[in-house]
Image (cartoon, rainbow, N blue to C red):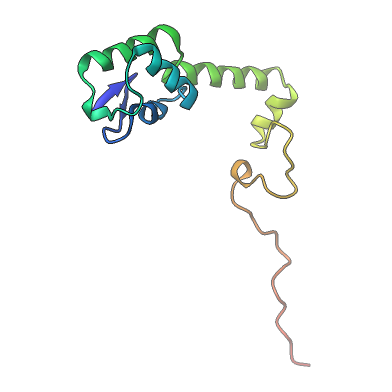
Length: 128
């Protein structure tokens, strides 16, 4: 099990896929890092030696914001938007989509489970 930037990456996956398990590294960045570290992209993580893992780790530390540091910056940006009461900040505070998506339908990921409002239950027939 290799650890890169504090994340245990899966040993059975190819290195370019395994690097995407680190927060802040996507497929494109992963391929860029691997090409600069001179590692075969289709190599499995379990077959990498310590030197190759070290080169990858050094490149990530030198040139990229990842994991905790990046999450701290992102949460700080959102907090700033909330404090200045910008439109985007208010949408974040209300747990609504902040990039112009519709909310009449969809938006369930951001808004959570649907809650039914009363008055929809069938009325019981009464004897007269």
